[in-house]
Image (cartoon, rainbow, N blue to C red; front, side, top):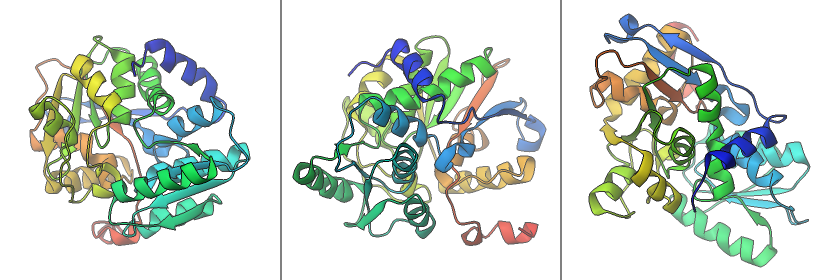
Length: 316
């Protein structure tokens, strides 16, 4: 299950023709009420609206895809990424989603030509249904966060960021099932401080650390559609034990405030899960040491702007 820097480097070369090199900007601390600036990686500008396109492409490009195509379970973002990658590479895709998945995310999956199957109350139930279908059809599975090729692909976010901002001391990364933080921490290893940030109502990494191993948690709250895995992935658990320095929790109000500030300061729309890492700085869940240069990954933007009540005030 170990993911190496070489795995991430090879993934970066493999997927380079198919993904965007997303920009980095410096967000002034004054606008955030912080005594330091923040280096922000705008990964929500990635194809399909989140970092997950990286893992999807790396998985599909690393395997012989059968005629039955690819199959995935997703709360939305992973499904859109797999559907996009499959369409781009000429494969059929079937995506299992919870019945309550956001309409904006389902529409994006369908727009990329995938078959969408809504089943169950949450990601775990959709995943079980996808495994049954995979067994029946022989389609290639693309796990949302607990598959080596997926994790190595997500790690290319850090590979890129390390070139764009080589002098960072700390990087804050949102955690759901743990694929993104596992990939990024596998790239950074001990070269800087990696901090996982989770919603208070979806604490998979926090709970795993407290128990000494991954455990099931109840999930809910503002970012549950993106960060609502019931249990931390086994790869993420292994990597976090070695390379993740801290895991902090943030309330929904701080996530909403992070969304608002990203819009006000950068005119960037971020879904709740995408803004969660920044919320750690705004809420004081993570306080940077004096002189630290801090980076934040904004990892997703798949939301319906009309559903976000802050936006009408701005005339959007």
